[in-house]
Image (cartoon, rainbow, N blue to C red):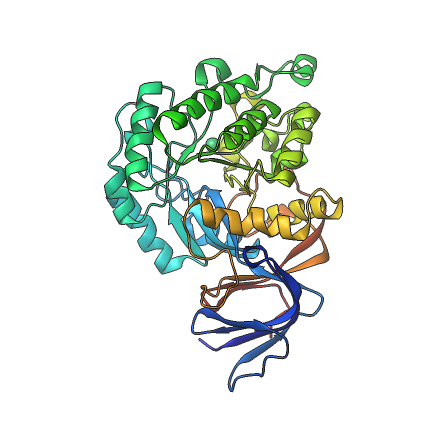
Length: 430
Ligand SMILES: [Zn+2]
């Protein structure tokens, strides 16, 4: 691979409190130098990035790549291509594949396929329980050895408190974070939308916010009991934010993430029965959206994660109640979050912290910084680029997005993984 010199960009590296115009030199798959007026090494590729941001590669903690088992929705090749186009240099692959990633063989398959066809790094997440049934713990040590960076039964919550306690104890011994899809399924009862004024008006069954927050409240007590690192996936409501804020004030090792769609859409988006707005947890009220935005700004919410969940028309061209939950997010996340920078909810530094530095820290991944010696995982962003989200032009194999037709501002121009160009916007790099 040739050396790359990124010249004259605005370098934002929250891990080092750095935000200034500088050159970045990538050599041998690592960040070699960051500074002004770096001389061009012989044979280096020079890329003019004036007016653009140069940031540590974005990391998505929550991606569904659908391989193995549901490759008609997405596979590791298409999913990582979508990730690279969205500015992500790494994604964490959730374990609810077919079969689920609850044993070494599945983890090894994902790692191997990612090496063969992946455009970006793929970090598998293993199951908490065998078959995600919530009964018997998976062999977490084996999963970790094979490459899993965390465990989760994402798609469902661990309902049995005793099983969750044992999971936290086991994971703590291994230093593995436990990621909870917090949903008390008895309480949510399959409700396809948020229980509130909108569901009453349009006649859909709702699930209350308490279906999420009640499980988080229980889990926080189990974290206090076990001391395990615990991370709440896709926080959607004000009550969960309050609980996490309290847990952090108690000094407990609790972190959490929010999705771009829970930051940008309310339950009003479901009023037209558009099945691409059927997500789990459901889109919530104005009050909840205000709470998660505030929490993302003040650090109560550590990270933005996409919950990229591809589905085909088979699962989505049906009645709202029957539609599979989820939307694709890898290629729209950055632009949606840049709207929060434009409206001063987040500073650029806080945005990059939430999309890169914090995910690396929570999951103990390399990357998340441009410190010399770090892997050369870099995203170059044009924060002003105007574009329209056209679902047919996205790289994901699926099209289930409610953001089709939306005018976007800001996008990844260049995504570099270990010193290699994984994605470049047309005409940007010759
Ligand atoms: Zn989930």
